[in-house]
Image (cartoon, rainbow over all chains, first blue to last red; front, side, top):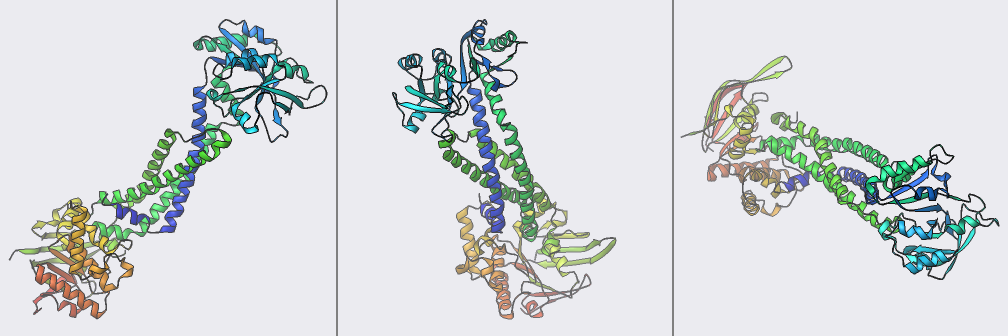
Length: 382
Length: 230
């Protein structure tokens, strides 16, 4: 600690240069925190997904959909406990900016396959009874001020009905809590499949995918293979995946977030290595007479090395912590838009470790140079 | 009297490319404890090289150097650092203060190598600055001090670790006559009242007059050594 004044003073010898270098590191670690935070957050969601559910979709293209007639065949596969199906509605309220996560579902089986959705039995029965019924999530209800009994003129960007209209009036018959299924991305607006299928002008009798609940998750792969074997060489071949793999494949349609995050962060850190190394090198070069003085006064080589590495550590770790702190603040701000996000402790640990590594690598060349200082020459200004 | 410094037939040769330059030739010299010795001579006579050898900043090509009872020509680089910290106070022509530190922090630097606590270091720094007459400028940075004041800070830095031997390389070379006189009187006081052994390289005969002995060098050899009335 007694050397801290020397380290701190050395660091701020050229204030502007230090601040600019620090800002670069702050921005790089802010980027690191944001990208790794999102990445880790998604991995956490994937890991938390249930292995007891399988998703059956078209092998060629998920958007092609599958015939509803597959339902009974899938149900007959040994090990299958329950089957439900989802059809994307492409819903919005009033205008396309008010997009809604609407899916047409089978009310009788939806809440069996997803047992952690909190909704009363009466409301589920009301959905089954009411052809135009809808059960919505608490957040959507709060956002639009909708309550049970309200009629909502739901619009679709896909399923024009037989009258040529895109409006499907629905009646709110229930409000559900879906927080157990990652409220940020889980569909939160259900309408009856029969209502959609009877009214739409095309695509009748098809669903987007089936969701299968299995009794023994250890047999998931075997059951998935059995389902796919059922429809092999048919006009609508299937691909059956676990919920985790399915979710990851969905994300990969956007891009490989992991690869993107790691590529950007690696590029930023690689650039930083040169920037910080250059700053440390310049700083040491300018202070060769000062280091020579310290050695003259009796500071051993290891003490001078420790001073240089300490400066690099303070610079890199302090800036990294500021960057990660800003990422945490940013997550707090965007959580209201994208759902609950935060910086996992593992990302903070990774960030600090990277900052230490950055300090070690960028400080090593200047530190090595300091050990080569010839006191007599340096004091004479040679 | 026990010699503070004993040089026995020392030589120093530098290599400049393929050329070898012999700067000191078989030089022998004894300096007693408590002496104030000035070393004079023309440029290139080997004064600063001699001072660097005595201070353990450089190693001789041949010969023996004993300072404060230690054969420093036999010490390793690491042990020489420790030895310098304990035995030598340095005063340079251009003060060599760390520009980003206050006067007090500059004076404290040699004490960072000791096991003294923060308050003990502070006390010693205050005493050293008091002795050189700069107690009221402790928090000033070198750029806020005059040349004479900066040299006083560097003397306080040499004093603070209680080194018995001061090596001064042209300590008044960058100062006006009045400031130089103040520094020389301070060195005289430290020699007289605190018993510090002082070896001072200078070009200035008036500065040399403050020493108790004047040593003259030319072309890497001792020319003469005269006790003075100072």
